[in-house]
Image (cartoon, rainbow, N blue to C red; front, side):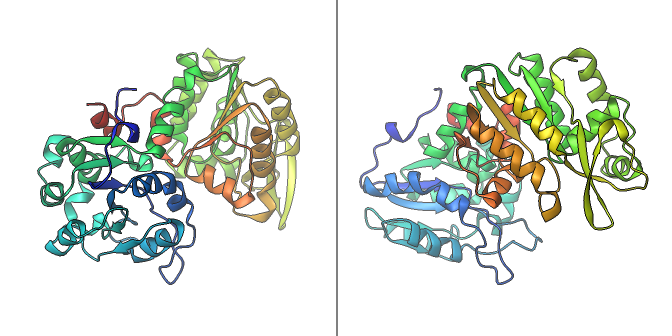
Length: 399
């Protein structure tokens, strides 16, 4: 590996700044609605505390102006429950009070600093050297002996807390960051043959993943679902009806149909499309064979059908590795959960399985599906790493 990990860090008695990504769904009272991202960092934080580190936790919640742009007091309270060590909170990020709180930390205890995005420069992106000159980094770094970045989900951001501290201090990857890089950054070393199950609504990113995996010889087969499958079906000449076509058009993804057509022409044996789909008609789920499309009215496609799940099940029986990214349909609606739930279970039961973050991992948690070998904590970061793109926070660790 081209970066240092916790194995390389002397911890006892030292002040360690740890960037985590605990940006979580909140309820109407601004309390945590899901603590999955907090639990993901328990191993890293526990290890540092058990080794008598003095841990200052940096994190963000929401975006300026957004409904979930809130403070981190509930996160600190939950971390105090999850960790076998005291976790305090200060409602400031880099003021004198925050710096004093770090200096006064006993060995083996932690403090959560306030939302880094309450500070305007944190919502800007800089190169590492410039980021190291921001107020956040220049104020806090003299009070820290080392920096650990465990926030893989934000690794594609070049913000001060993500790249500035790593430039100013000895920097290390936390356990979440280390595992994500080792697995997603080394897909070419996983068992073969490899299947990519690509769906969801992030069409441009998904198309880039498909192209990269095929051009680099990483994928032996691509199984399409969700809106990604709709784009490929349109590219293959299927009439999906105005309801489904309009969704692609309204999202500004019409040009992706040409990209899909080029991929189908270049890799006709490797890209697989649904054989049937599900629509909503008079409040009821109705499955239609793709060859019988378009629907008689303007109903939009909301899921893959049972025939497609069985077809994909057969294809995945021989897969050594399956990379799953994106749900198969509108899984938030009870009538259209079946395709996502059943296909995800197929992947979990297959060979070595990797789950991309974002909506994919949210669906996994919603359905309580176990058996995956790796569930990524990152959505955009996972997609970019899978396409071979350099992520700023990882690049500065390697430097």
